[in-house]
Amino acid sequence: MPTITELKAVYVTSNTALSPAIDNIINLVKETELNSLVIDFDSRLEKLVRRLRFAGIFPVARILAFQHDGRALAHPELAIKIANGNLWRDSGGRFWLDPASVEAQKIVLEEARRAAKMGFGEINLDYIRFPSDGKLENTTYPFWDKKTSRSEVINNFANYITKNLKKEFPDIKVSADLFGYLLLRDNDLGIGQSITELSQVFDYIYPMVYPSHYDSGNFNFTNPGEHPYEVVFQSLESGKKIFEKHQTPFKNIRPWIQDFHMGAFYTPEMVRLQMKAATDAGLTNGWAVWNPNNKYRKEIFLPKLSTVDDK
Image 1 (cartoon, rainbow, N blue to C red):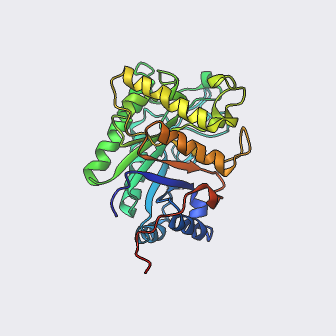
Image 2: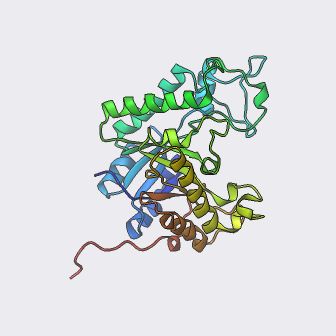
Image 3: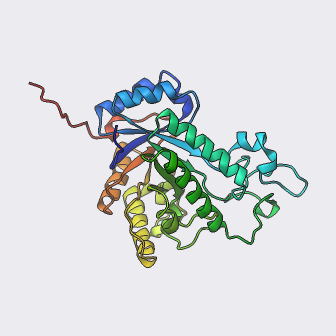
């Protein structure tokens, strides 16, 4: 099936994808405007990918880049550590690979290659950054020399993985999830994500503009989570100015949309208001909806328009 230009997707964990619950999600896609699933990559998904392709549903593989407990434990020599040599944990207790490690980058590339071979049409990279929280002053990096800027490390990796994937899979799309705050701040937030530079490397950028994730006072709201339309729209409008400043086209943006109860109880209307904000901001590449429990309400989405003569 061809690449989706205006992607309308929901997020699916690998556990859901490998369970009977996936039937309900596939039916939801068939009955609504949805046309894609963003699925946490798992080596056991080959049968499901074939099923999705047969049903005309575009499969996107979400792959964690540098925050990955399994890889860090399997390859401690590639992981961020503390002074005594033990693996460093972020505030959520998670382990990280050193983004500057060539071997760590190869491991991520190999997983992306497996997903592409399996039939995924897009590789969506998450945690393509340095860690943002925890006792960062305690970190020691086995490969990053700290002379090279964080953004240069991440940019180099972005170029490395897209170049190699597209060499082997010319039709594959490669995208990355980035912090929503990058649309408000003209810097890399200390994590190496330069949104204007990365947008020129990846086919699509997915800023996580979840209203609940903004601080009190942003956009003059005490609780930004209660204002889904305004937060998403103003974030994107702010981003346009940053892109314009850097003379970079604001054209390959696909926001992550919030469908979980944080900051407020999110009704279907509040989810749709975020989609409207993206459209009103001039975006044409679609969106992806995030619900960590994968329980999506049908009333969020428009019914699928029939393309078949029913007579």
